[in-house]
Image 1 (cartoon, one colour):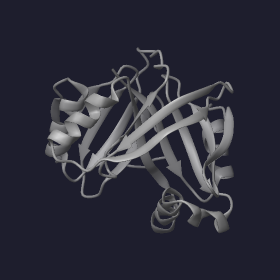
Image 2: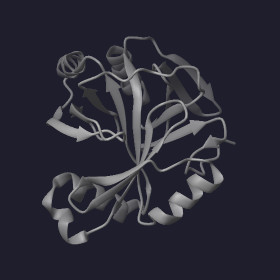
Image 3: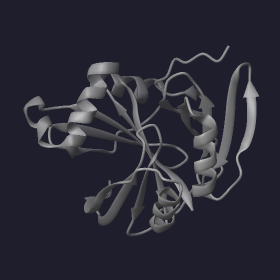
Image 4: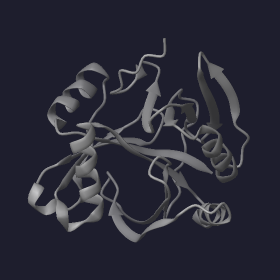
Length: 222
């Protein structure tokens, strides 16, 4: 089973972003914390399950303490802001690792860590990633119970759509529904609490769609 766990949005204006998503879209910040030294986060639940995590530099002097913090800082310096990464939850990390190995993809492990859930409950988790334009995968000690039925989608815009669709089909275990809109190719895969939409693009990026439209994304399709 695969679920939308979170989309991470990196910015240098967290207060303005908070105002936009709380006042204009009705989101609520339920937790704050640090993902890496010097990197602060604000967590907003998505209506269909999963979270929007807004990440920003709180203490620039501590950012060099982790490679992950430096990578996020470099992203903000280059793009100013935007969706930094997508995380999917799985209940079978061994399957994910096996498929990536069979297909010859690089694998990056975060190791097993203890985290605190928004409720304050401690839980063990481990993460695995591959190419940066593809999702990270997380497995929690207790699998999240999905809330299906809400029309939300995580979007992967990719310059290698065919290869990415083929890989994600093997990982998720479903055949993608392929389509075309104007000159853009698309692929859809089901998650337990969302759709995963892939779009052909000149540059790699992520986004999120809900009934009110794209969130923090002014992309126009026409």
